[in-house]
Structure formats: structure tokens, C-alpha cells
Length: 479
Image (tube, rainbow, N blue to C red; front, side, top):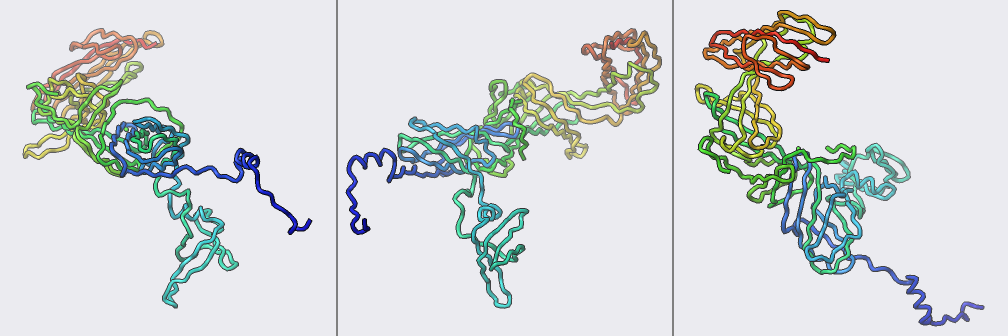
């Protein structure tokens, strides 16, 4: 049969139905593509934890159309944990069919990698001609960070010029983006998106200025917020969580009221409340939390809080289990400040952990730094103890005057402690003896107090430019 004699019959209805059933000759309509940026935000709030992560909640109004929609949700944190993302629509009618997190960002190195095996143009300035020359080249490799090209049949590297590309690959993004495939029933939606992100943290710092008698002080608390999550949040409602929140590690490392007349008033920009087994601090006004920004906000201000200075001289457990002579000579005495976190003392707020830095004015009135210490999360009505350092003018010696054993793990020893005060005023010193095991003080020159099962103390006065001796005998069994 010749080609000319071939007759083509029209396709009947049966064949059309069969083609339609098999999907032959027709194409599935691609979902509509939409994009949303920070410009669509109507609300944004951030809850920051002092364990280097934060919770972001934002509300956006979107025009999506109906049916299947591919939505590029931009301006999210680059340190987002995609598995924690939640999206819901206020009016319903929205479901997520698929979620992708695209973080292959547009960089010079990525452009080179995406064009391996493709044609590019190389440009260099020719000084002799006084203009730029261009060369067509095939990019063969970028392994090791050095591009290798094929130019005019020759393979070379180290080309002294710039590279231009024919286009930007579709799978490279200018910013990290969440991409959803949605099934939507309402043309316009008000959606709420929440997610956790790393590299957002806060800490508390305190400045404590005490008076000349070391009896009262003004305490100011600061919150320092660091945002390196890779996104900015303007006009955010800021909340902070203080506490030790349990998180599961995946093994990956990633680049934390009114006061009584005794204390004065405590001014606060944050409203504090108990939240589960933690404490939540809410900033009273919106604030901008910008990318790569360190922000400081006042947490509290308390005036004339009562403080007690304590001098403490510590011993060691193991000294009671062997024979020694003089174990301490001219040992300095530790200096501490005790502060009651109570409403009667102008405080009474749950204090987040942080560093307390203490200042005091000298005789000229100039404030001088006198020490700092870190404190843990401290509930209200608990005591805060701040170690300031070591006393310069109060020192002590400790001698073992006698020692004998009763069997393999029982001993009896006599001790002498001499405390010397070189100041022009008397000082009170508390002597801590962490003895351990089963113990009995057989006799002593000063009254002792049992602190706990493993510690007893002496609280003695040391006169101005004088000394005080403590002598005691103790029996200890440690097994």
C-alpha cells in the first residue's frame, strides 16, 4: 500500500473515552504558584529560651485561590527546624499535602557547582587592547574549590578573570524558604505558622551597687537577647522562658509587684508569671528583633535591698582520714553577699540564672568593681548567695594537733584553727567543717552547730587587729 493510498479515519467517541481514561493526550494541570514574604505578616511573636532556641509564631494574610496551590513561604529563619513547623488556617479549608525546606542558597560557589558540565563565559581585561575580552568555556569541575575549564580544546584552571552564567538554576534560593503543596478551599486565608529555630537565645545579667556599710544595695537586672537565627522580626511580641526545658539531642552540633517600705520599689518592663514548671517573662511592649542583633532590655530595678556580708572559712573532708601537720597557713577567708529574694526586700520575682556584678563607691564617690558571681534560677523567697572573692585582711591557719585510729576506718583527731583580723573593725567569721561519714564532736572551745549530716560550723567573732583560736576534737567513722 502506497503512502498516498493510506486513509486516516476519524477517531470515534469510544477511542476518545479510552484516551481520556488513560490520560493520553492530556496533561495534569500544574498547581498554582504563590509566594509569601514578611510583608504579609499581620502578627509575629517570639518565645526565646535560654538554651539557644526559640519559638516563632506568625500570622499572615494570603490570597491563594482554590484547589492545589504551591506556596513559597519566605523570610523564615535559616536555622529553622523544619520538622517542627505547624500551619493552620483560621477559617479552615486548608490542608498540607507536601512540605519542602529549600536551603540551597544562591552563592558564587553554588552557581559554579550547578553549572558543572555546562557552558559558561569567562571575561578578563586586556591591558594592551584596553578592553575586556570574553571566552566561551565548558566548566569541567569545581572539586577542591578551583574551577577547571575547557577552552578552545584545552583544559586549564586558574583563569584570571570573572565568570558569567547563562541563567540562575531554578533550585537555588536567595533565602531559605518553606515550600508547601496545599489543598485550599477558600480564596483568601489567614494562616498561623509556628516553628522552632536554633541560634536564638537570651541571658540575664545583674548589676548590684551596695552602700558604704555593705548593708543595702540597688539591683538592676538586664536581659540580653541574641538573634543569629537568620531572620528579622519587626514589631514582635517578645516572651522569655527561664528554666531547664528537656530537649532530645539528635547527636548533631549546631554553630541559653509592689514592694514593702523596707525595700523600695521594683520597676519592671517584663511581666513575670509561672508557666508549667518554668517562668515566663513577657515584654510589655512590641519590639524589633533583628537578624544578627544583640538587644538589651531592663528586667527589674530594685532599690535599697537588704544585704548581708559573710566571711566563711572552709575545711576539707579528707583531712579527717589521715595524719597531717599544718594543712593551711595564711589561708584567706572567702567573702560572700547574701540577698533575700522576697517582696519585703524589694524583689520577690523569679530570678533567671545569670551573672551578678557588684560595685561599691570609694571615698571619692567613684564606683569600683568589687566582684562577680553566677547565680542559678532562683525562685522568690529564696536566698541568693554571691561569692565576691577572698578577704585581704582576714586569714587563718589550720593545724592537726593529734590523730589516732580505731580500726581501718575510724579516727579521732584534735584540731586548732587560728583566725587573724588585721582590720580596724571586728569581723564575724563562719567556719565550715565538712567532715563526712559518722562523726561526733567530743569537745570544743566554741559552740558548734550541725548544718547537715556531713557539716558542722563555728560562728565566731574576731576582734579588730586581733585573733581568735578555735580548738576541737572529733571522732569520725567513714565505712
